[in-house]
Image 1 (cartoon, helix red, strand yellow):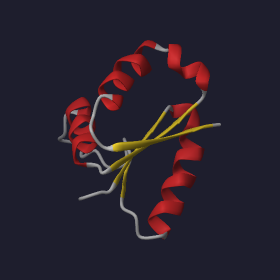
Image 2 (cartoon, one colour; image 1 turned 120 degrees about the vertical axis):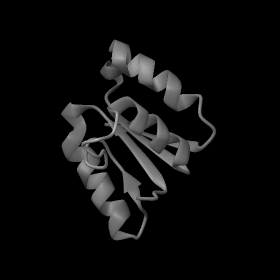
Image 3 (spheres, one colour; image 1 turned 45 degrees about the horizontal axis):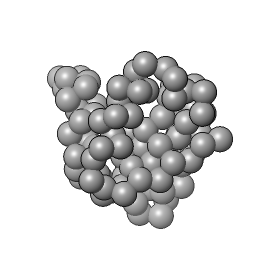
Image 4 (cartoon, helix red, strand yellow; image 1 turned 90 degrees about the vertical axis):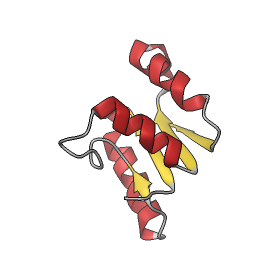
Length: 91
């Protein structure tokens, strides 16, 4: 499904991510979230990279403590080097 926004979040922040996604989609803004939008036949990492490439905007929901987790550092490096505009929502 085409989307405007890629929502990135840690599992611990899923409730917040779901609320942000609901609010955006209620306003007609199409969102992409893993694992919701990953098909069973998709490669998980490839699906995320493709969704980031397609998105016009990325919303990152995180606790500052998460920045030191290796997977966040790795994926954050991929995400923040991309061209779309980003909005970080720490809580």
